[in-house]
Every structure is written in structure tokens, then in C-alpha cells.
Amino acid sequence: MVMNVLFICSQNRLRSPTAEQVFANWPGIETASAGLNKGADNPVTPELLEWAQLIFVMERRHRSKLSGKFRRHLAGKRVVCLEIPDEFDYMDPGLVRILEAVVPRHLPRG
Image 1 (tube, rainbow, N blue to C red):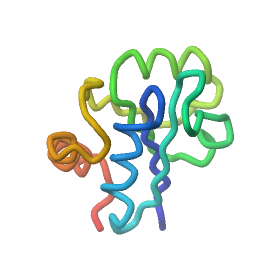
Image 2: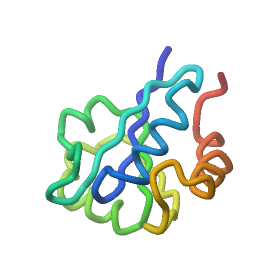
Image 3: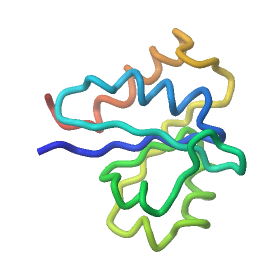
Image 4: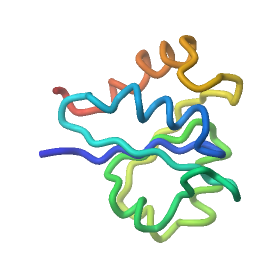
């Protein structure tokens, strides 16, 4: 059984695409990423939320914005806030270390 995991940040340019890439080959999951802001490279959609079984947001404000815009699409979904500030570049080694330290405890054992 494969779990669909969605990573969300503001613009889908730095943090969430990094997380998607870092966990792309994790056993037992499929990954995707999206952004909540207007102009996001890959915007959050109801269809993407329907696909996701586990959702990671980078900041508390992302959880609030997600709930405000898509509340009915989040019923029964687990949303985990990673508390990662917007101060990293794409594939920044510091960001990768944080992701590797925090995300796996929420993923199925491969």
C-alpha cells in the first residue's frame, strides 16, 4: 500500500520541492509538492488535497491558510507542521538535514 504525501510551502519553489525531492525514493510513499500563494509554481488544488493522505506544511501560517481556503477538502486528512522558516534555498544542505531529521517519524516504515 502506497501513501500519498504532499509537501506545501508558499510558492512551491524552495522548501516543498526540496522535501518532495528528498523523499521521492522513500519506500512506500509517493510525493508531490505545491504552494499556497498566488503565482505558486504548482498551486494547491482540491484534487491534489484529495490525492494526499498525509500533508506537510512548512509553517503554522500555511496550516491556517490551507484550512481557510480548503477546509472541506481536509476532512480526515493529517496535516503536520514542520516549523521550517522561509530562509533556505532549493536543496540547501541545512534544509535537507532538518527534513531528514523531522519528516521520517511521520512516514510509514519502508
